[in-house]
Image (cartoon, rainbow, N blue to C red):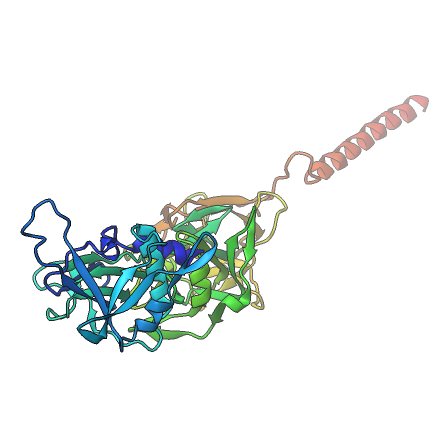
Length: 504
């Protein structure tokens, strides 16, 4: 599965060392890597001796003798390494005592085995990685930035004994086989992370919402190359959002739909904490065994919901308009941390002002807010201590808006309808709802020094006098009917009077 693929992908193409034909002069190994702070370990598998005379005869193949000490920590593993040949397990290496030194074993390749291939070397590297327990490295090196450059390298000591080395890395399973005097490249790639807000199946970096709305989040973790350690995902939610831990899911794509990852493969820690001076709200750990089972570029999805609450930051036009309710995620793998990915929820406000026809502010009017021009759902409002209004949360006492000149805040992009439930004394109450649309900005009221309306916001005008009915209303119709009856009665009385007079 993944482990085999990863080993196959990393072993350098210059693995001719295993074919007994790689140079081995100066004893230095340097790892070129883009990950600082990672530890590398070098294990000498074989001693290497250059066969003299090869350089003196151009065109002839260079020759190298490979040996291993009888007391080497790798001897038993080398002897026990087998491959299938025609369905039969064959030992790859044959070890024979040197005539002049019984403690030295000469290494040769079983003629039945085709070991002069990259694939064969890659398989051997995987085998060696499985035998690391209890082994002592000949040297270790930690990657760091090279002074005066942007390069990150790990360099082993320069007096390493010449040999054929197996180099491991703390980043993952992709190890390197090569002789000394080489520069090798870190092939492990750490996982990556992307954070999004999901709205109507669209994945966004920014959205708007009103207080009380539920916001859905999605973290996509993409597996890297060679990963075989746990992945820890951290998430920081600002105070304007309330996390619902019951909504947390860890999923992968199945045959044709998302499927839940078995809970044995990950842990969720809902306790807030801090790591490297960075706070987080919760973390999720994908277990090392599960990570090792993933293939390169496999994706794991972490989803959850949070509610925009009464502590939400409201965009303030008098500051810089950057007030947002952020959610940030990142992951760590080995000693590496990815860049933080932040998504934002923005919420706005508008002004509601009640005036007469001349722009003079009137008091005593009351309003309710709805999501439609007729019928629809009432958006219940709560009055803040500063006199502003916002959508009420569960358990809070809803009130009618008293205007005046007031601000309603904590609203997302949408159209909002205000219904007048009471008019100022002596003024007519509106017969239909007035509306205002929020479109990615605040819409506040401006008045002059005399508190007379200048512009902006939602202006609701009231007129004085007897309320005139709309078409079809009962209103003055009853007066028309009464007048007609009175007129008919008068006509009847006049006619009756004349008739009586003529009879007399």
